[in-house]
Image 1 (cartoon, one colour):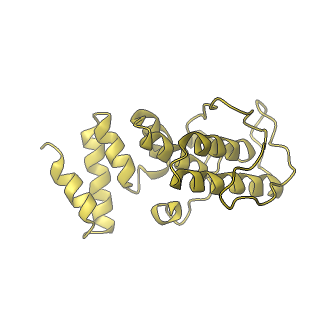
Image 2: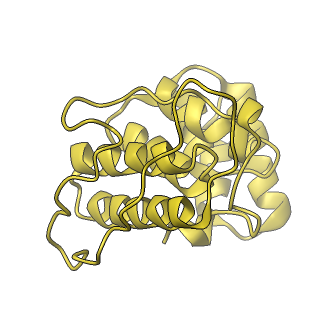
Length: 175
């Protein structure tokens, strides 16, 4: 689950710490549209996203619920390897709450799965740079940032000394 990889405080981040979201093709980002199948037929709250282009406003509870719904749906779609749909759901989530950390993690994971490693770094780095995250470390390797990758793997091992994936990744880096 995404929560297993995320820190305990994975709720929101400050606006200045996040990368801008580039809308995917398809329905308007704020348009709730039909909910795809797959057990996610819950009612989407009838709520408008915050006004775009204005000053940052704290989302209300209905907007936060809508944001969580779309992020949860995005992770279901990501698990089913429906990357375009997942990206759209995560973007919709961010339209309701631009600071939703889980949606940003989801966008980073979608980008990673589609080999768009620079984009994955852009989404994951503000959230995990200080903590250590395997996908961020691998994305760093893929974009040629081996010293940053090494730092990520070392942070993981400081927290989880027996993490075989991080040990293997660290050993594979050039000295």
